[in-house]
Length: 99
Image (cartoon, rainbow, N blue to C red; front, top):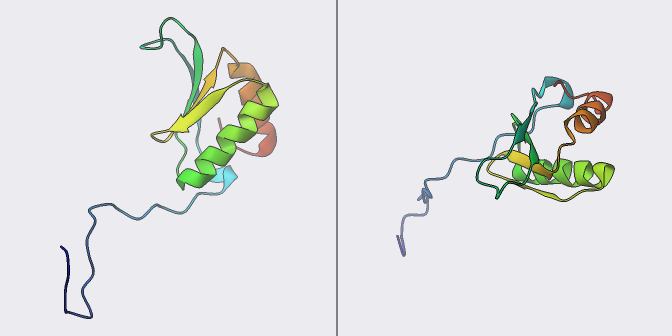
């Protein structure tokens, strides 16, 4: 669609609007260890986050700072370098998340 003369026209991008982020108490996060397709490197994978991408990135940054490691957030999951499952579980539980 390049141009429309209809003032009530709504362009459909095919993308759904992001859902609002659930409160910490209602989030059900799963922590696992992963080595597949990572060149033999071990990473801690956090899945199950429901909410906006900005909130996922903020949580990822918070966990990286607390653990002192690198990582990334994409496709609805957080990837933290190394095996820091117990440390992350303690941090998230202390902050009010359900593990």
